[in-house]
View 1 (spheres, helix red, strand yellow):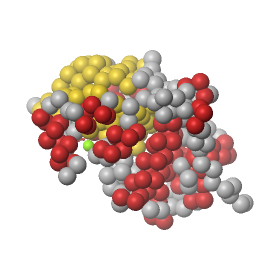
View 2: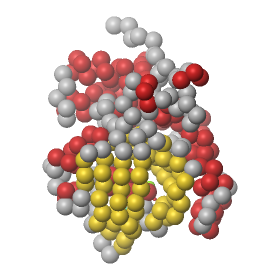
View 3: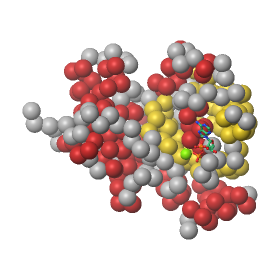
View 4: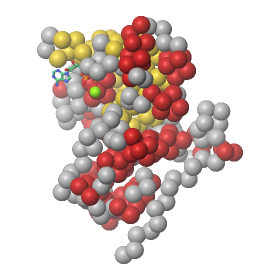
Length: 280
Ligand SMILES: Nc1ncnc2c1ncn2[C@@H]1O[C@H](COP(=O)(O)OP(=O)(O)O)[C@@H](O)[C@H]1O
Ligand SMILES: [Mg+2]
């Protein structure tokens, strides 16, 4: 069977782009769910890793989460997706709530709903090596959501087209570049129709020229109205493509504002030190 030519997502044309550079929410795509974190505290043993963290991400917003290594960024994303338990606070994703009690039970309905609502993409791709790109993308819909495999394959090919990999559907991860693997991982995260995407340093393992192709996919998703919370060290990308930048250091949010403010005029020495290190 001849694969259709890869179709890039239709870039929002100039006439439909609003002042913030995004297509208006009325463009037909769901604007996603709000994410709200209130008073979140998380310990590993005696150590407090997240200390009374509160954060809101509004539907359609792209938030870049930056900060020094070990500050708790990955832990926060993992709490949001129910991969980590937490001791205090509350997480709300759309109408679903996670509380300290819920997250200890992997079968809780709220936890399952939250996991379905938020797709997650990791630095190291986490693709199944023995499955093709298409099989990786189809896996969760078929296994978790009981989607019929013909329908899942059709949708999977569309998603691979959307990330520019329609012609690589039948390739195994070892036959793909790092940037291509990460784009498969994004397509896989989209396969469950998430209302938001959590990205944990998804370009950190990639060569500079491969970072761009992954970041371009995120920019396309942003234009389409996806809610995105991304941990990144790409300060240039955060400045250009994030609606808001949040700095997490030593388990606390120390800055939260538009990129121009946080990156160009930070209010804390800690942020200045961090930025001068990553910006070289
Ligand atoms: N499973 C774990 N057990 C114990 N300590 C952990 C675990 N995961 C993370 N930590 C610790 O929590 C702190 C924050 O880690 P992390 O959230 O990965 O930070 P970041 O992503 O900002 O670099 C680090 O000191 C790390 O060692
Ligand atoms: Mg991390």
